[in-house]
Length: 381
Image 1 (cartoon, one colour):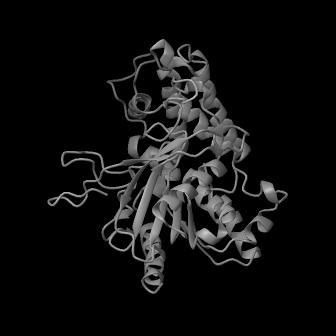
Image 2 (cartoon, rainbow, N blue to C red; image 1 turned 90 degrees about the vertical axis):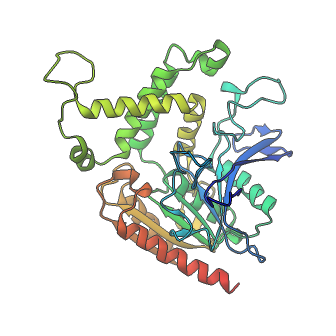
């Protein structure tokens, strides 16, 4: 982390190169790759206070702080990570990264394929959660971190925390799995496919090589994000915020923006289409679909968890219908059956799936208490 004397929360990303081939789950091999990261806090002498933050579908390495004094947009989890916050950077060394296949600096579809000298585009491989964990293990090695004090994530990030605990049991002391699931439901897979179809059928998609045609499938990406955004929100929260409030005076009897909620969704879609790569969106949703942490154990999750050494913190939110509390309770049930240490909280919230990014007091208090215990343990390591 780079700090300025007058602002300790000016942070600078760093791109870390890995000049080693990475074998992927689909049989392909990346000859080399980069990971874009940000770090916060100080790694202690024992290197026992490191926390990895895993991002969700559209997340990235910029977890907390700001990139310059006039930056209006702090990191996506600035409410959770920072000095004196639940994941306290005065006590922990926190690492955030942009996953492989991302579009914020790590090797992905926008990167140059060293074998062709051109952008990967549609030729970039489909990546899985297990592939991410392998690359993140190499990142831990880069920092000299033998064991994470905690791996933390919400949604797709929570899936990574779970996969870490299974794939590298000796390297994870605590796993915080928030608003997540042990696998996608058929409904979730269906939502993802509709989103992908919106992108793939956009006339500007060009089989994924749209940048060679100096265009991007904005319409498809916009629609995909609008639909996805609806699923991240709770009906009661959306209704409370917008209701049936009109954006214009009376009905227009057309298909423009008439309701405030329409204006909101179109704004979100337009903003997302300008900052996110469509090929990355396709691959991130496929990583969600393919997530199956018990696949190597005959689809027996209890068996998959038997060798886990980490303690678990699991959190869900009452109005999250994308990853409903029943999904988290199922994980807790398997952890208990496997004889593992687990704490669970189900939070009353009006924010739907996005609640893991919000500041509902019981949620923040529970994470703070759990992380305080970890910090105390680190102090005595």
